Amino acid sequence: MERGVLLAFLLGMAVVVSGCIVPPAETPPYQPYEREHFNYPWGEIPEQNWTNPRYEQILTAALRDANVSLCPEMEDIGNCSIQLRYNARACTPYQSQCFYEIATKTNNEFLCENVSNPLFALYCFEYIALAKNNTVICGKLASINRTKLANWYDIPIENVSLANDVAYCRQKIAVQTLNVSLCEISHIAENNVWEFSCLHDVAFGLNNISICELIEITNEREFCYKGIAEKNKDQSICDMISPFSVAWEAGPLTRDLCYQDVAAAARDPSLCKLVQNSEDQNGCFKMMARLMKDYTLCASIADQYFRDVCYSSVADWTYDKSACQFIQNVNMKHSCLNPL
Image (cartoon, rainbow, N blue to C red; front, side, top):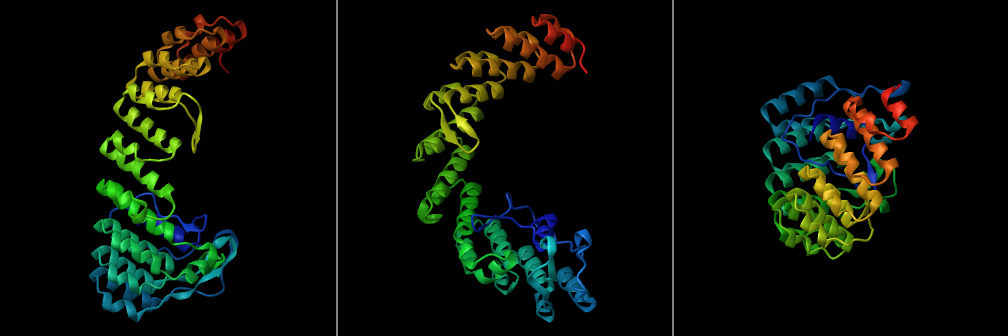
């Protein structure tokens, strides 16, 4: 766990999405957590001091020697479930940090069971599960005290679900090991969205389009096709995508969009001719002209106005006024030659 991320969690700035504790995007190599005693923002200074000089010395010795026997000599100072203004937390989790640091440094998941702070415990199990590619350890996330997590976030306990944390952990292992069998719902969670996301990532990692075909939802499957097409710079894969708009999380997905992305990946402006929608085709040539810093590609745009916009855009992008001379619109040409 990167030290900046951990500090953010200790300050209570962690994110809750749909009642699920969102794990970090990647599992970094082990780094000791560098504690900086809280500088409470905006003048919110608690009356009590949450540090303990004796614990500071014990913690330093425990982490230096990876001596877990010293951890029980400390306790977490304060109450991490008390929410101060701006979500600052009134605690310093000495004992939890001690067990967490040594557990993750030695990849010993059994030490995670001694971590009383719920977030340290959650990331302790997850970190080691990913380090060992062990889905059984992912299952231990479900044993974390939901009441403590609810208190930490100051939310009702029914809004705290650890099932998605277990699913996320198993999905990450499936992707790390490129093991498509781990993407099955029985291995992940009851919600098949996790399975589809897992299949997409494994398909991309293995560069195997047949895995995309295992995805049952059309837009998710076509998003997978698009990723493989772009990765291989192969526009023929785009033909597997519907020519009509299909909504997905980043906007409308069509065959035309796939052609545009492959054109950009391959640095091949000729692929823009495959785009059927005229406005999208204009946008494709404009994109390629900017990307390749070649204003001559703007001449491929049939519409005069969009062609002028393309010349102006490339001139602005490249700081080269040579393209301005081809603009037909008088006002646009003047603005191109005389930018503010």
